[in-house]
Length: 48
Image (cartoon, rainbow, N blue to C red; front, side):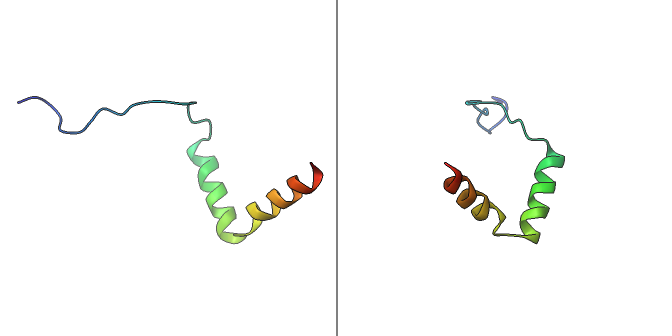
């Protein structure tokens, strides 16, 4: 009667700049080496 029962999606912030292929590759890499992100944060903190 009134259309869809789902609320409209509200877009806020920056648009997504990572492609689906990039996201899948990142997830695969994190499955192989789950500590890689923590290591990158530690290295970035040490160089700052």
